[in-house]
Amino acid sequence: MGAISPARTLGAAALAAGAGLAWALAEAHLFTLRRVTVPLLPAGQEPLRVLHLSDLHLTPRQDDKIEWLRSLATLEPHLVVDTGDNWAHVDAMPALAHALEPLLHTPGAFAMGSNDYHAPVLKNPARYLLPDGRRPVERDHPRLPAGDLARLLTGAGWVDLNNRRGVAVADGRLVSLVGVNDAHLDLDRFPEGRHHPDAALRLGVTHAPYQRVLDTMAYDGVDMVLAGHTHGGQLALPGWGALVTNCDLDAGRAKGLHGWPGPRPDEPGGEESVWLHVSAGLGTSPFTPVRFACRPEATLLTLVPR
Image 1: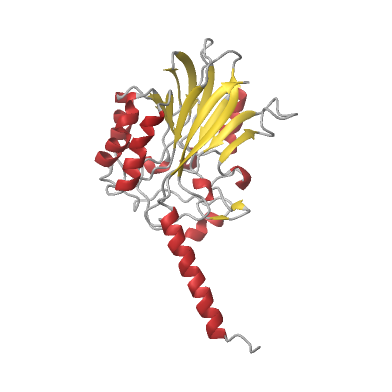
Image 2 (image 1 turned 180 degrees about the horizontal axis):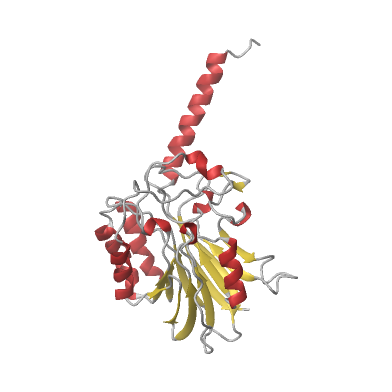
């Protein structure tokens, strides 16, 4: 058998790279609903359905994403929690309002992410491989009308949890809420106060799951923290998972349901942990519209008695 020529090797590599890119572009549109059951309610309670949305990064003409988001109302959640980065374009408000409209009739809560304040700009993707891939928000980052977004959501009765506490009534039950503004921009200031004493459930809400935020929420006594920001790594290795989280959370918890700080609370030795759910999110930056081995997602969390 003759030796394989360098030209054939390069050609095969280019073909494989092209196929991988084509799949990554397609996978970014394979919107997926995750269904997760979490045992954390008091004994005797009926299941409570919480829809977790994150990282929509919506732009005006993403019709497939808009229609998929609208269809989530048929799940009839009792509570919607939005963990930020809703849009990625200065003209996206009409599209975002249309996408969320069916869900705004449901009780909800939200916390902002960095891309609720500033539109993304072209960046070196290798930056995300650094231990802390942040860079300061500069003048080349177009500002987004975050105030208009907050008014849209609060006008529908959703609870603003940007460095605030609040309560929501979901399926006739009181939910005590605490949240912080975007920790990726160092806007987080944990609010003073306590959880409502009559709450059937205590939730913590943050966009970016930095360890300082998770530790403080666990100390505050939440039952579960909901977060986004990581995109699940966005480009993952099959059989391995995420390489990065774009924060100081370990890559093993880049998406899905876990315990914080240790084992899940239903496992031996995990009694001091709280549930942590990190959404891989539904979108990407418009400058890197790809996902690999990490489909865009929303999650229906069904909370049941312990």
